[in-house]
Length: 144
Image (cartoon, rainbow, N blue to C red):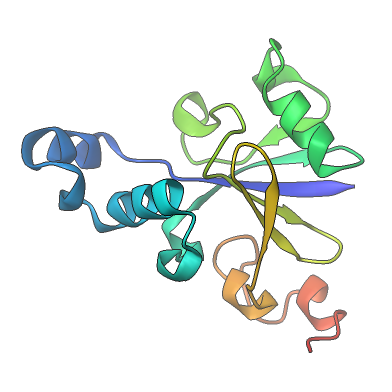
């Protein structure tokens, strides 16, 4: 099964701004910290995240195990790094990451000790893991 991995991937300019002015200087970083600290998902915006990789495993637990293994992630057959900047692209799988099941499009937030199912509609994934609203994966799902 294929899982899409989403992480907050700050640019060098965003890191410089945070270092200069503090965590609130970059809105998506501040929201990410608020959600991570409080486990209140009202502030979570799916488009604050970057689609950094696809993992080919059988379960969420295997995604975490593979994402934290001491391996060469760039050359592993079960990992496809899709980030614009692969050297910066994929951190270990950890608290604050979002994992999307490609078959069901269900989104899960990794709290570090469990997965929380997020209420994200498939159309909200356009531009993130789908390039257009006509993507076959969206059209073949029944949206409740």
